[in-house]
Image: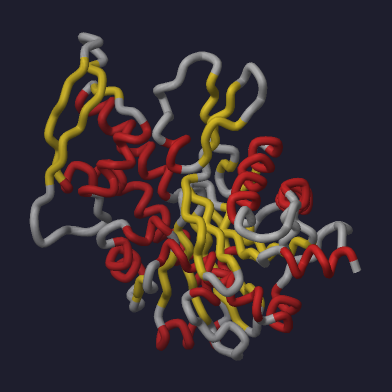
Length: 348
């Protein structure tokens, strides 16, 4: 009865707990949180100073007593305590206008494909510690496919590539289950690191993470572009130690990330090679769907299409695909029961 009372006063939430961004869908409201998965903490008293955009703006600019961290690495929880504080912050922020003194939402959270039982339980425990009354864990490619509007319940092959910040999830889905899949750690963060390494090796220039990410967003591409793009690259000269700015173009950035792009394409091909032929026939006819924030990289769909010979399309608003899928599952209890992952006993 107490759980029912908390449920009546709380909002059910669907969460895409990503390495780069945390997105939250509130039942009946749509996506209400879209913030970087970054937390700033005062190390002297353990208090949270900022979360999300405000915390990300502090990266590399803090005094010794302030720690800015990304508690999720490669799609899994690297710092349980900070993750719990981040989730609690979002839960309380979303429930300030309700009559609930203590928010106790029912939560659906997506996790990467290859997480262990321990890692899966850590996600559930973090949400419970942050105030959830019930947690449902689902695989991110399933959520992304639902969010992209794919008929995952039908006996047809649905191939989805969910490119996030920490991981790229490649999966073939049929009858509400993952038939063949692979999770790799080449995604948005790795592409940014490629740019940092390229700047160091080619220009003797040391870049910060934010600068590399901005360049990737501004002029990054996986395939040849119709028009040349340029952007300033600012960092510290490794020879003089002084600040320096150079102008780079899309061809140079494409060269910097080319090895990672090729690796993603090779993994897609390797999944197709082990997929049952009937499902491959469906994929040949229906094509591949690309979701996730890194799907926004210019020409990524073309690069995969050229490498596999299959049609590839980027879903509408790809960054929102996983969280849209969790929102659908909040309303569809039967589908949720079919796709939910088993976890060790939690509070009911």
